[in-house]
View 1 (cartoon, rainbow, N blue to C red):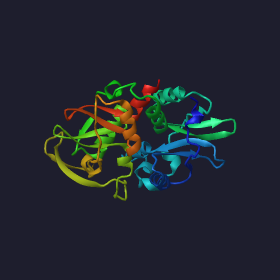
View 2 (view 1 turned 30 degrees about the vertical axis):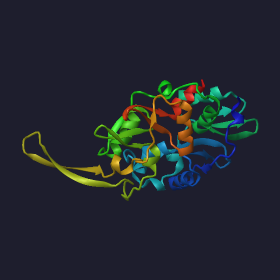
View 3 (view 1 turned 135 degrees about the horizontal axis):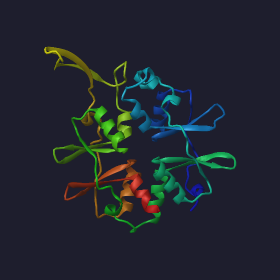
View 4 (view 1 turned 135 degrees about the vertical axis):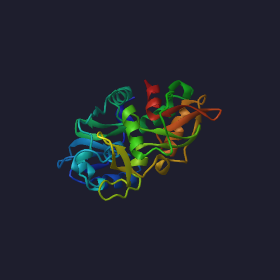
Length: 280
């Protein structure tokens, strides 16, 4: 099947000189987690996703990164090096391109220019309609699940996601699943601090100096924790279910990750990326 047969021909666009709050509002309004960035002539030049916004919430680095995130220009946070795909290419080409480049969408180009966009959600809908009884959840799921506990700070959660190059983590309370966090949970969380955009508290501690004696140090600690922002209304699935059921659950609930359980124990996680691999 050709990409043009399942792509979306309505693409949400934003100008590169607009501010992040405009992108966030568009994402919330349209129920999406990415917008395409264009120049003055409406040529696509980049894309901004909820993950891009999550990364900038750490507040480290140059001065512009430490400003309230909503006032930052889109061009500062967008992903450059835009990868596109031709409307007449096969769906498998889209799957391979997304997986190889670790991206979740591709602007689609035809002879007239920008024709639409294809996303992992589009590919999952195709999978759900064509691959009944092909794979079980256990065949496609990721078995090495990255977890955090509910008291971990938002900074730690972001660092874990970036260290492992993942888009979601399961939050545990003792040995039970307490919730799940994706970039959208972080990007759209309520943030209050006027300097960094993240709620912080200054904590003082004592450290022994090189020449003896104690030195009083201060550190700003994020007040947001995994427990504050996690999605507690999570869905689980049994590892022996048809993977099509996982695809349908994600599509119907507009989620991207489902913890996989066996006898209530966490044994894996299945994501949109895992499912679209089943198309190859």
